[in-house]
Length: 171
Image (cartoon, rainbow, N blue to C red; front, side, top):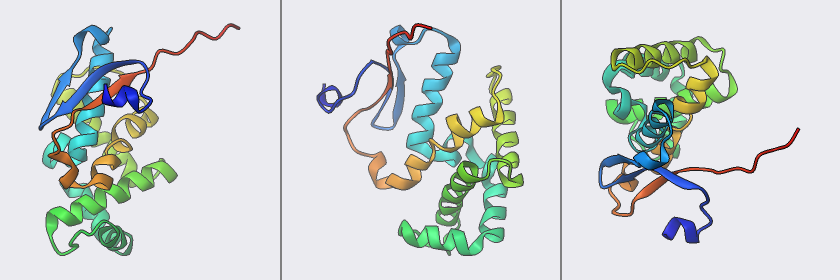
């Protein structure tokens, strides 16, 4: 009700509440829709590392080393301690998202895409995704986690993922 009063439209597909992601089965019309909603919620609330575990740590360490000045600046911007490994990786995660948005052909982005694809195969998600799909559905949504910080993750208010019902366009 609160999100509707703030202008949300469509039907909720999933939501995050007190550390758990819930899928609304009646709003999900396919396995692909369920997968999309699940990853939208987990990435936004747990980030890339929280969703994919340590699979990206080596890449994030490479980014923190190779893009040191940029990662340090991002750490400072978000009030993170660059000397702390986990906080440095969080800043590197944000830099990865920025690189994916501006230079999706970058070797760093390609490595992240490969790691995400491998993870999805390992857990049984058999869906065809282009590089752009992975950037737009996985890497970029994870920025919300970094931008809000961990403090925003413990709030008691549910956060919904909405499916918009758009009018059909005649051709």
